[in-house]
Amino acid sequence: MKSWFSSNQQTNNNIDPTEAFKKVCAARGLGDKYLHQTNAIELFNAWYEGDGSEEDIANSMSSFIADHDDISYSKFVRFFE
Image (tube, rainbow, N blue to C red; front, top):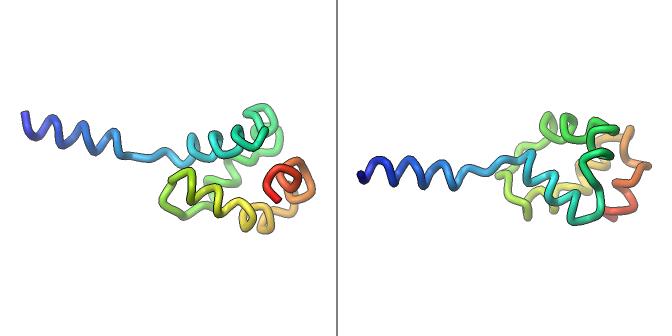
């Protein structure tokens, strides 16, 4: 039983950066449709190297926008600056 609880706890502690990114964006008013139109999810996944927490992702958004000229003048700027 102990090993089952241990593996279950590890699964619950895993953070999905993609889902956290979507939550951070949604909290600022950016929905999935816009994220897909701008390819932001794929760009973010390729760029991001943090711990995957929503706080870390929110703190990294200014750098992400600055590093991606193709989305820096879009809604991202309005919602994250």
